Length: 501
Image (cartoon, one colour):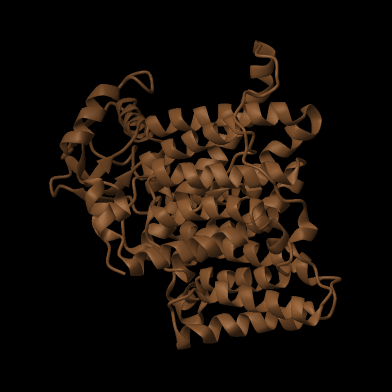
């Protein structure tokens, strides 16, 4: 599907965008949005239950999040709606203090996201290693699959052939035609079979009641006092951080899949705006949804903002105008869609024996750690943080041994030159002080740092310690070969960290 750049990034004249939406592109975007909307309904209801609020609160949030982020977001085709991670953050507050405080938290969390986005929090994504990203994707696939397991336990026997039939349909139908998304065909056929055969299986309607009208804007019913702010601020900050992390990680994943770049700062601010709007319309807030995004981008082939906007609009249309029919869709049809999404999301190459044999041991540990933490906590943000910390520790341990010291004594025995090579920072410089022969060396000692680089105060302190030990024995030390950044840092801090020479 060839698109004008505006349709992807929103950078050019809107008239060019209209010309980019050919009938073929419109069909792809709208049908993909419809499939996403169908998948959003049971998910939004489930997340509402987790948050301890009426199902309509989650559905309203999915509608306003999708429609708003389609306009203000930085990653076209990404789906934002009510999510499980956000539901877990706000559930204790909703349970203990009620819906009004939850709504206030969503609005304040949105404001935090706008501020964090403006401060450039998106730039922190560059510190997320590839092994963490792979772990994030694989953990996500596992969570998507695990979320379907309850729908396959203690259910009528007819559920299993329906799920199997749905999977077969979605695998084989694209070989016939790709004009209509295979998941949409599968949902339609399984619904028809269920109704025609009169099968008594769980349906979307069993998850909760659907809204019969559009949400109405208003302010949260809470006292606007310092006490309220103090109560909701910690929840709002956690809400903002979890939402941004999941959204930015998902945006990076979509960037890789579509081979395009997105505006991470714009996405961060856009998430905040979308949550503010959602809170004002009585929704529970949300962030990017990886499962629905994969349906939209990988299964549906969508690439523009139209699919995201359509998903939100179709969600409300389906609930309000076609609620009785949507309620009859068997959960087995949606479970089959999500299982296929799970299978397609998992990076099977990352666990292939050939890949594991070639991959450095530390990289595999980081990937497995990320997956394990996410699966254990059901929180992608926690997994990414722990995985990133593990990657940093392993990296520090690896490079800590890259600083080497070799000594060369002059033939006349009056001077010794120590050549230091490698990167000097807190981990690698700790052992530096033990690499010198303070008693046996002559009175003139030269430390050559031509092939080294000083990165932090710990390294300067280590050099100071070396000079102090030689000075205590009446020996002179000269440091040479510093590159410009190292020389500036050394000049600023030398003698200030260990009490002088």
